[in-house]
Length: 387
Length: 92
Image: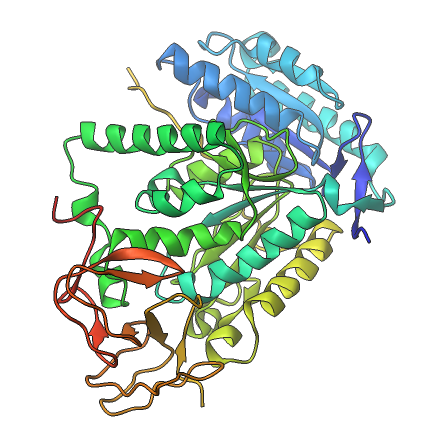
């Protein structure tokens, strides 16, 4: 039997869980004007991009691609690209790429329009127009197979690998069983779990790509001259009972459940195959979640031990902790407490079903803790220098 | 009352769900046969051996190797940095 959520079917066959207009500055110089537009229109979501100039072509191209994917994201019903007019990032090209998706896009150029004030006025009016048809729009039944869910962890502690990550793993298996897509990420956090990941790869080709991705991450870390493995596990991890980097990585991998890994994605690359994919992202929570959402994740499920408040500009982020003290102290930032597992009150599978039920309610409109607080994090990876 | 968690049936260590004093019977879901009694204090989140692990043998948690025992470990002993080393990192 297939489960469903109440979403918004789109023209291209996808389904959204929110109706938002993305306000997209094409460079840091346009960020303030863009933020003013977003602050004036409920339902407008600012992508707080600060690059677009004086950076490598590779970084500008990556940003253009991922910003365009935000504009085509199923949670987005329209985009306004706010350009300064002389930045390196080609704003017209960005708008053109967004226009290939199902939702409309407008390009505003601050230098052409006569500065910040007219740009903000025009952008505010356009954002309101784009959102008008969606105010009070009815949700419809959409199958769980239409969902893409990103997985992330941050501020891990001893409870993460014992409660939150295995519970999220059980949740991941439920999404995959429904034909949905789940994305496991954070390459550096998985160094040390190669022996387990090998067995999880769906084919020898996937296994080879997975190992190559992990090896490349290790090479990049070594090239910095700093000793990654010398710092892993961290002193806090060791105090909490984690002895080796293998043990830490195995706890992280549990978020992905037991499904085979069907694809290996580059940073921000949308998954095409149902099931569990792995995306090459940094362990940095902001840069990783930003890419997971660029790839089309409708929701992100985020496990935390010590507590983390973050959200995302256009996708609900569901926070899960296995630490009862953290939940008691930071409950306003965290959606679900699965410390029940550590007290023997709930199994991983039961907690996974609870996360699943909550995720479907969130997909159907219930706000997460981060959404209620107005979290709208957006940070793109930048590999080269700013010059 | 359950006071420890075995994550995978193949595991040779379990994780303390509360601070365990020396001499505590390790109680996991489904029970342990033969019974294991802690020989040291095991803090919350830390590992205790539930099987004899010989020096050079892999220590199994999550059903997979988390490193190698650097000395013989008896059931009930604390398993941590003093008797378990990474194969992958740190000491390289």
